[in-house]
Image (tube, rainbow, N blue to C red; front, top):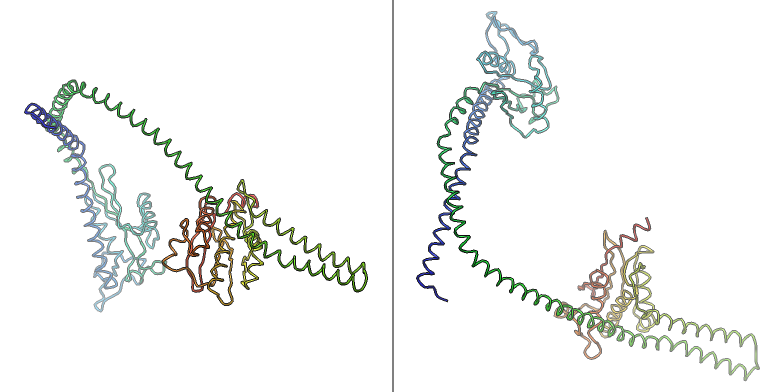
Length: 524
């Protein structure tokens, strides 16, 4: 796209217009800011000046008190000054029989205050909430400030202006030299012991400030300029608006078309997302079913192993019955006992197949269940297989009940997967004294079920991929789906986490589930 001279000229005019509008707006803002802040700035400067003046007086008094305190007070030769009755001794006699009055920091401050307060519009006073001398008692205003210092010991001073009077009070902090006289009042170094008030008339200063601000000519001129600038800006704006309305209208129509196209695309995209989500869910369900089928195949082997010994026992019993009947004749009591043993074995076989059937029964809704019982249920399925390979499995749970909320059968399948994986590795690596430990406990808002073994752990190159679908370290014997499905069940179906790490002995699979708050409320 290229621009001719005409288009270039329009662009230059447009930029000039924007610059001019910006200038007018900036000028108006500067004027408004100047009008609003000019008086406040002058008033702030005056207040700062008064504050510094009061603070300088306060610091001078404090410095004189420090000078006095470093000598533990001073003695003044005088017959006119009445000794302080709160000082002991208030005076002494010199060798020449002259009266030497003891002046401590507080006494000296009060004498200076009396002299300074003789000036018109000025008052200086030392005061405290814990009085030794009643002449230092605070008035109502001073009492409020002293209470404020007690609540806020880090505040060095406070001031305010009231009726053209600048009222200042500085906090007197207790120092080591002060404790000689004031320790008995309970003060410690750093405590606020009182304050020094400095009041002086600021009417003259505020009168001068008002005189300075009477001249508003310059401000009025700025306002007129701002008004003219605003009017010009408005005229320019209206002209530009009329000229550009047609262009804006065309742009709006084009924009509407684009929005319609975008809406249509969003609808199509939404449908595509729904289709893909549905496909993904189907894949997940398929993977879960595949995992169950794989586990079921392993369970059938366990069933066959469990049935082998009972069937052999039944065969032996029947042979015993047969030979006894042949050699000794039929003994009814003996026959009954042997038949009862045979029936017990058959009941055991029947119960075993019921356990397998219930184990693979799917859960339709979430429910509350005992983690310990469901772990035992998984163990029961592979108990005989583990005993056949001398694998010791131990379930540790200090409480009889640790209640979770979710799908109990799916949780049992996860535990079964972890036990089966540990069993396979223990057998493959021919570990001496093989063992599997299931540790169940709770901490704060979490429930934990940790399955660990002593098979030596998972190789570091595999540990970060162990939960990937179709990833297996069992060559042709594994499907690579069991741990993936276990993680899906715990994290997506039961809002928990499943992690793996290596310990000094072997692999550690940690399942964490949230505590069911609703169940806790019901039991309470």
